[in-house]
Length: 83
Image (cartoon, rainbow, N blue to C red):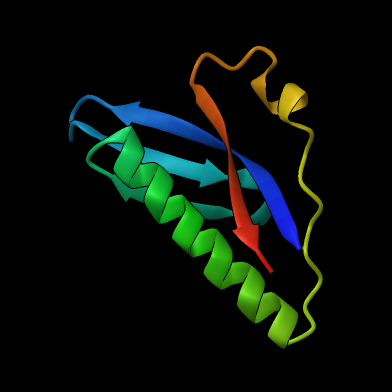
């Protein structure tokens, strides 16, 4: 089953890097580019869901993309994972 979560990308000018946040699951990763942060977000989402399923943990449902995007000045993308 393919699942998608909205991910917010925050730019940090001081470190010239991006933080990717999947707020629904409290997952945060970094990357030197949006592409790298996106790849890292996809990897952590896949790993998180794999182990949550393995250990029968509750998984928060994703917030609808439009709700996350509305009023958000940061880049918001859907990150998906196969579980």
